[in-house]
Length: 45
Image (cartoon, rainbow, N blue to C red; front, side, top):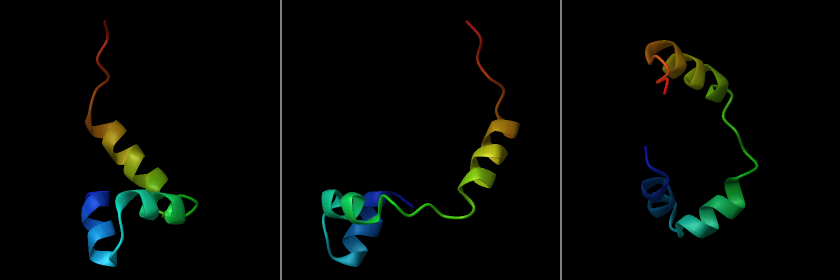
């Protein structure tokens, strides 16, 4: 879900949301990146 939608649902701006919640990282973040990296081959120049 886009940050803008989350911020709006919580009743504040994106700027306030990012400054207030930037220190929180979901436990699944590393797993999500790993899944994306596995499914998409790297583009080489």
